[in-house]
Amino acid sequence: MDFQSRAKVTALGAYIPEKKLTNHNLEKMVDTSDEWIIQRTGIKERRISDDTEFTSDLAYKAIEDLVERFSVTIDDIDLIIVATITPDYRTPSVSAVIQGRMNLPETVGVLDLNAACAGFVYALQVANGMITTGQSQKVLVVSVEELSKITDYTDRDTCVLFGDGAGAALVEYNQKTTGFLGTYYGSDGKSGNKLYCTGLSDQFGPEKVDRKNYLFQDGRAVYNFAIKTIPRGIKALLEKSDMTIDHIDWFVPHSANLRMIHSICDKIGISREKALTSLEYFGNTSSATIPLALWLALKDDRLKRGDKLLLYGFGGGLTHAGVIIEW
Ligand SMILES: CC(C)(COP(=O)(O)OP(=O)(O)OC[C@H]1O[C@@H](n2cnc3c(N)ncnc32)[C@H](O)[C@@H]1OP(=O)(O)O)[C@@H](O)C(=O)NCCC(=O)NCCS
Image 1 (cartoon, helix red, strand yellow):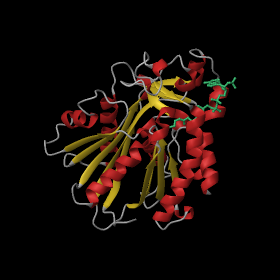
Image 2 (tube, rainbow, N blue to C red):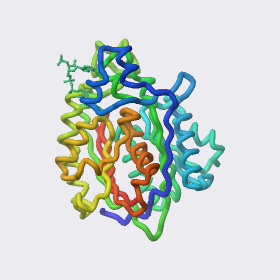
Image 3 (tube, helix red, strand yellow):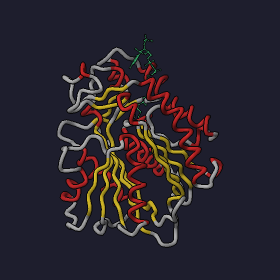
Image 4 (cartoon, helix red, strand yellow):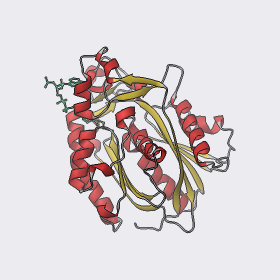
């Protein structure tokens, strides 16, 4: 890396809503089948928030889980970064809502970040940069999505893919340890129309402007972007970090589609068993898939302190970003 990181991820938590939406439930809603969904994506079920539960509620519960699981105090954090594309409000930000709800002092900085499914990795990079340059000491990073609230449940192209969930990570200053071993990022803004949520502008699809706040995607185009661009990005990340894939204990890609993940594993030369995923039970939760995969691996003791993890997010934008961290 170009600089010596002084930041380390010290704790992790997550929350997923109670309500399950299985493939069999979806069979009754649109023309699809459990077999098609599993064969094409690997997803078996996803979690859906109820009408009174919003992104900041999921975020808050993920933070509570982090505090409980790692017995850490967070009343001395100085910055909250929330990665999300489904904020409760356009303003205030989810991070501001959380700061208020947690009764944190007014010296705490708050920042929401929109990098879609690359959000967790971008947020970790910002936290690392803020800590390493001495601007922050203790940063709370939360990746949280309520994609069910921007999913059209009459559209089988998208509704079988997405789910809701939240992951939280604590990133702290550490004089002795270099927790971040490498960082890399990129984008392809010209392909923004391949995966987007309808909003104020109609430039991506005038015919869809009457259906505001719904996700649209050209699944095949996004698939091809992922299996071409991500292996290239991972190669560049490893080179920049003076590492090879053999140094990596766990690969944690954005958990959107198991076929896509297997293709990427094969291209970068890592065993498919070393990929940590969350899509099977939570679907594609955008920025939350990576912390949810880490959380599952922590819960069943696969993840050990000292393990080297390569996280790589990619999605709407189109964006992509990777980090290598020591757990
Ligand atoms: C969405 C995705 C699963 C579709 O798989 P695919 O193999 O590309 O399938 P296609 O879109 O070519 O569709 C194949 C057929 O299945 C049909 N189909 C589409 N969705 C379906 C569904 N939910 N159930 C059943 N059939 C479906 C199509 O209509 C098509 O039928 P046809 O052959 O008669 O025309 C896949 O493209 C994908 O995962 N893309 C990446 C998506 C992603 O990860 N996005 C988020 C990134 S952050």
